[in-house]
View 1 (cartoon, rainbow, N blue to C red):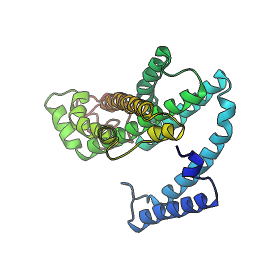
View 2: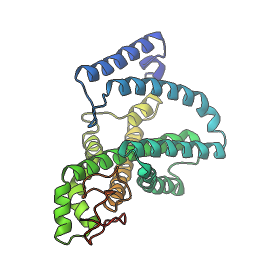
View 3: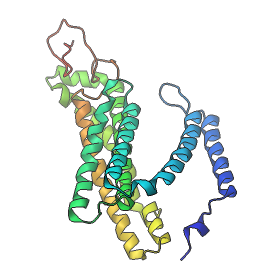
View 4: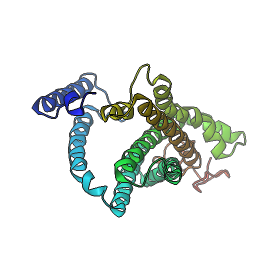
Amino acid sequence: MLAAETLLPVNATLGAVLAVLLVAAAGAAALARLADARGRGYARPVALAGLRAAAQLAAVSALIGWVVRAVPLLLCFLVLMFAVAVRTAGRRVTDNRTWWWAALPIGAGVLPVVLLLLLTGLVPLKGITLIPVTGILIGGALTATVLSGRRALDELRTRHGEVEAGMALGLPDREARLEIARPAASDALLPGLDQTRTVGLVTLPGAFVGMLLGGASPVLAGAVQLFVLVGLMAVQAVAVAVVLELISRGLLHRDAGPAGEPGARRRPWRSSRTLNGAEGE
């Protein structure tokens, strides 16, 4: 069995290779002029994300041994993980004050799974096991929340005329938005589904490889990886469902746009009303 240090030694060579890869990633984004819908390029965010990841992992590596020694410190660290995920996901979906609603899909997906694991004893209340498991689940919920929220709101903005047509035919605002947003938001499940369907054939995820490097048997490593993948699918399905409900009810939205979008304000001379309380056309 190869030791982890033998597989990937932490030395100057590793630092140089990481720097080259980060420059290549940012350079590819700049060369292809990759940008979001507002024209903001991704080259700089890619570079900053790599540097930030290095700093954060260095800090966590220094603190993790201290945090896992006491349950109160462990719980504080988990709350910090959750808060950062909510802030990151919420601000990716919207720039206005409704971003904090991202706490609901992330919490609704992660909390029941973590409680189930603790109550059944599959995961003990120890930082060395609880932190990585919870981190994986929070990360999956964050990704699903961002993808489903952005896709749903983009679709509502693009197809706002169809939403208004549904409202004109008598559909409640929620139902009209759901008809348009549901397929787009559901696409957020595809990365997790594909990863689960191809595990062992295309990819060997981190939990599996990490346990093998730690000396676990292939059977045990496979069982743990299966648990992680199934747990992630449950977390992400719940997160997407909650995001879709929040958007359809107008609780999570972007700044006012076309009348079919959540949060849009309509002129007051007609009687129909949005879920935000503004009268519509």
